[in-house]
Length: 600
Image (cartoon, rainbow, N blue to C red; front, side):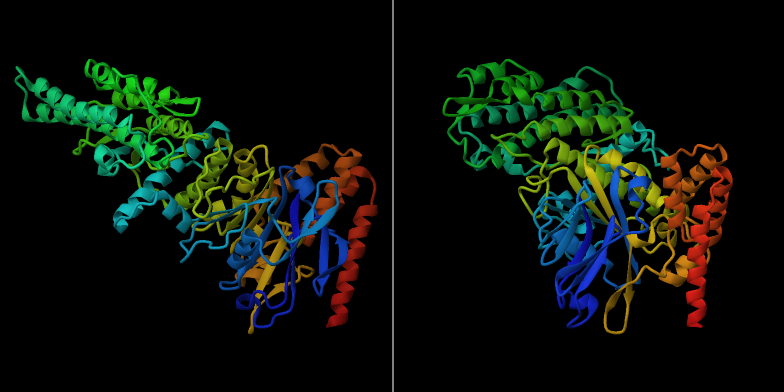
């Protein structure tokens, strides 16, 4: 299913359409165009330029909202995300449609690279806020900190999303844009609240587990001190060598401490459900004392448990934490050391493996006993400064990829709801608010093509609809005109412009700028150019069975560049020996020119 149109009641959006504005109907270019009067649907007419079924079967409808600054493009996207107080026309796969005032059945994802003043307070059920401000708040994981720390946490989480997407992007063979490779990253151990090392300040960790946890924290500190003393005993070390040895030992044991702190943080998040329902063998003290820290940690995970009635929950299912510890320990050497013993230098592949292991550990707590804890164990900082265009490309696609992976793994991370995944079905609507911001002009030219190619791979298995906003004329060149919402700002408020006299799909840049952007010069978009190249190739090689010929005629009919339209029609007539279609186009053009002459 897809949203083909929305009816906005009169007076509902005065800050866009003016005080006491009339009702507004917006069509997004579905199979039909819809007309409302006094809130009632009074007209359904075929969309003569409907092409989404032949352009891209993976995205059911691709639309764009354009207009000047302050016209209301962002507000319209946010309106759809919240899905309040309007009537929506939903087109179904069987060609039928229905009216609804609720978009609960469609998962609506709003993304913008801009830092707006506020996030959604009325996101609406089954809506997702992936705005810049929402991500900044989520990436800080609820901590209060100075601005530098706040941004550092966000940039670290951003880097993790980039690394995940980079790997995915290369693995699917879609690497048309050479994205930056992070040859080196700085890995930093994060700090947890000091109270997690103070059992007397525990609130919700099981009483039965606290003594063993206390013993482990003590062993970590004691064994670290013993190792540091033993490392220098009887050896004639230079100051630099002693410094390196000390740093390697300190990082290893700070890693144990941070990992145990993470585990305690998860136990504390459980509330008081297992306050007196912990389980550990009675000889735990003897077992831990006779083992080193690594072995003691493993013994604790394999033997600790909580219970409810007759049901028992063993922590042995979380031993992936040990895999993570062992892998990070293997990276500790003189070459990876920095001037801070809580930091290491690693490469991108190593960072990806750490991220995957940590994700696996966090995800192992998604069950009926415990809840997912998003606080990071590590921070990541690339060794290069990524250009603004690369940042925006990575931010856009990595954020959407991150959300898609969270949906598949049932990881519920949301700023507004504790149950943001509860209603997600097969249908996803992506609302991308100027996602091409800061793109190089060549990337802007390719923007629609990138979205059409990459988004179905990211959201594989889902039915997608995409609505974007953009200021870029080349973007419109890739979109049929009835799929474009022209928001025209007037003296007393914005108006929804009529597409009848507009030219978009395959149109030259001069017409696009004159109609929508008030600029000059350019060429058609990359996506429609590719479609036209394929048509020309099919005509030249006579790949023109009945279905393909009809598809080509539909596309040519929708083209708004007259020279291109008539040349392609002429080529098709010459190849098939049939001139009815070319004659039809000429008749339509003659009629249009006569109407224009009569207006002079």
